[in-house]
Length: 123
Image 1 (cartoon, rainbow, N blue to C red):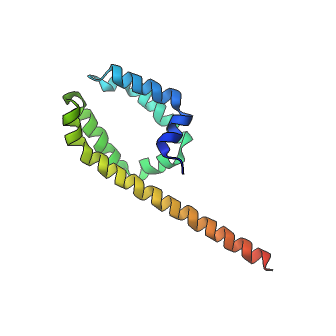
Image 2: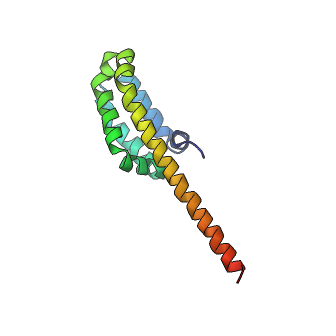
Image 3: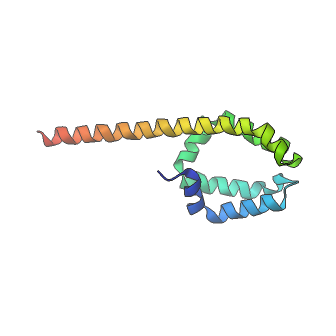
């Protein structure tokens, strides 16, 4: 399965590049890039359905990580890493759980479909 970030990069490359350039140019004021962040989020949500599911089911972790980035991004990389890595780790664990659960549901649907096909053929 192609990773979500690869899908976003492939389908929303222009928005991703614009947002990244803005962040690099406005490190002291990342809120200046909010319109580009919103545009990237909209594109990603429509291009990669898994992201919507993650946003819905990992909302607390997303908010905690976003707040940490806002609070510590102007304090330098070391401070950002020290303070926000635990929040990023929590978000990663949540996203992995959602992916596993969705893949499990997909596998279950495939198994049910195969079983229904076998039953239809045996009649």
